[in-house]
Length: 324
Image 1: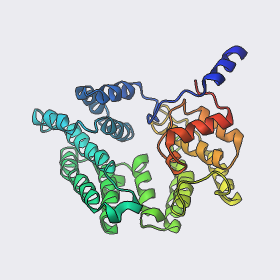
Image 2: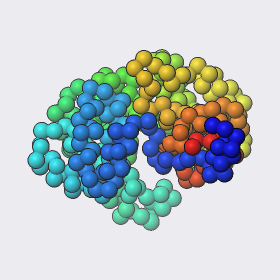
Image 3: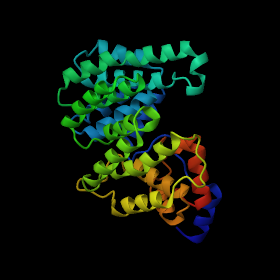
């Protein structure tokens, strides 16, 4: 890119692709079609993921968010193919995503009891399709990962949360989304403690395979810890020198390169490290990670700072990051 092109790119600002933190053109096309109401486009995208839980987890999460409001269409697809585990999984995760949209603000729960009841009912409705998906594909960890989010949303007793976590990781020990769900389950904001959350994040990062995004649990844990005390977070004074040193060390040992290509969740890891370095005012590593997102920001950890797209754009603007 020449000087003139760089100037023009800076004038336009960073390219932003909202809520699509992946490098998966098949998923891009499928999610766009599902968002338009063409849900049949999502079926082959899910079917192709059988055997690769990382891609399957990512695609069902994305396609379920795109399918919010189209639950009845998935139910109609199931009526014609009741033995398809992909459809049952999709239905269950879509109900979870729809339920989260109903969750009342913590400060408003006392005056929104009816909405909290609706949230619990919507979340509970996801259980049956997920259990059917698990029974139809016994080796698939993704229904169990989805059940982890369900247990979190319903604030189930700790043994219930531990049980679905165990079922998931014995099927796929390094599944990123499951480890993220576990991290949040253990966080002080969700009934856990900072001690057990950090112990989990650090032990997971220490044994992560090369190229895995699991080391990004370290900055995400620090965001969760601070968010439990105050939200939204401001940039100044939140990450101590010791915290910064830990994140720098973890990031320095992490690479997104691995045999078989870049991990499907690597862009989420770049978001986590980039946001952490931005908050710490470590400009050079922040630029490096944010540039590698390609403008594809994730909800976490930007939502801890405010509205995710606004916060991502603000960071890129202040750091002069070009993602065009």
